[in-house]
Length: 155
Image (cartoon, rainbow, N blue to C red; front, top):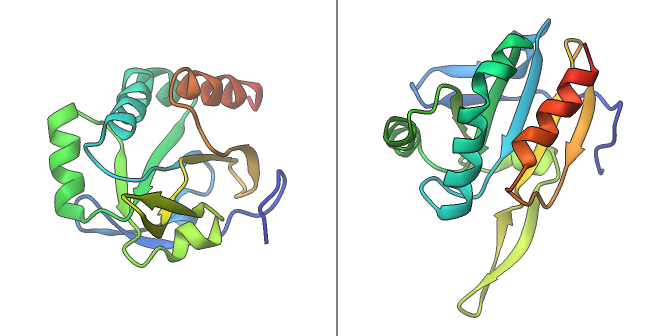
């Protein structure tokens, strides 16, 4: 099933960068920017994370929570957050179950090997848990700003 605007966001329970379990439901009453990215410390993922970091005060003024999801470990997330001073939570989807629920796993090819990888994607979830924005095959430049613009329209 492909998620569409207005769909209920799939619930999840994942381990955060601080090794605590977080679930989407605990953010009910707040807007959530849920962004999926392939891997910590890679050029595109670093640029995307830093763009969200640089706009974090504006997202915070809108009382929005930013959550990044990849298959990296909590320890890798911690190092990534420290290295780039990321002020938001990164979650580990080790078995890719949440990636699958959100439809962000796609076949990729590297050095002749084909594998399932995370397609850079973002979902804007409203206070009641419904999807109000979807960006797939994200191109990093200006993406965080586009998400913020959509968020601002919800208030």
